[in-house]
Length: 377
Image 1: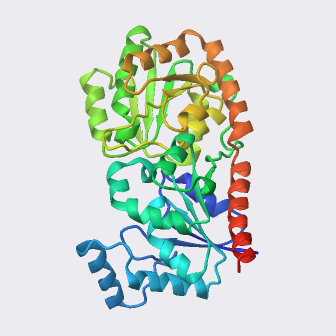
Image 2: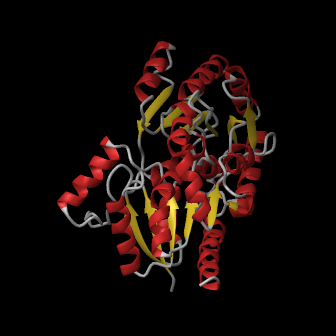
Image 3: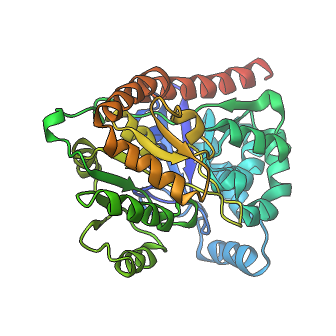
């Protein structure tokens, strides 16, 4: 069995289920390393750099000298890849790929770089990594994006067309499945995600305010955490919506699944803030559609492919608060139509976004990288 090393920035986080699915389901002998701002380390917490002075040297060069290709880190990763006889490396996020490309090249191990969102769009990140990206693109076997917008952005950053592959996220359609309609509310909207600028939770709240004026029975549940959570709570209070909006905090997957079964519509007003940050293809929208919910969202990144406007939900322009409110109101005004949209959304996910299909495609990409390396050995 081929040996795969997955390198990702952080240990498991609630908002990166798409990466965890790679760890859980790719059918290879897997090793997982972590490392964003710190030296690479393993599941047992041990750093790849073996000595205290080596780690101190790394941190000094990274944080004080602002270097990216740091010899002590590169040497440690090369040694690890050779010792573990790794056949291929999957870098989760372009920034990780940029930091490890040199080590993969020195170790003679093919590299597949998987971009996810901000790493392809966020202006400060691109400014910092642009040159390193070009070097990583030159060595990488394949560069993966999760939406057509992302593929276009990567092409503009210098990724060779022949190395670019579109492979959106996949959803466990058994875990996220439609409910018995008798358990579903006819008036509860649901948002699940991080409270950050690119998801613009305040716009969703303002749109909901307009809906609540027409439909006093309407409710909004907002699950998640993030830097804009307290600001969002304050806005709800300012608008007199504290009795109508529930902020649940971060919830485990099974509770999210339960909320999806009990809601009438999933809402997310994704935008491109001034720093250029964008979504890839939001997993929560895919999960909601798999659960048979109509979606009200924006014409943004991979959402334009995940939601078929007018068929599986409604899409409005970014920052169009009134437009979003109108579409949310349509969901309440025509529940039968909303249910039809939910059913069509489920079909769309089954045809294009199943976890098994997306994992099989990623596995094929990794195997091809290994075969290409052997063919040129």
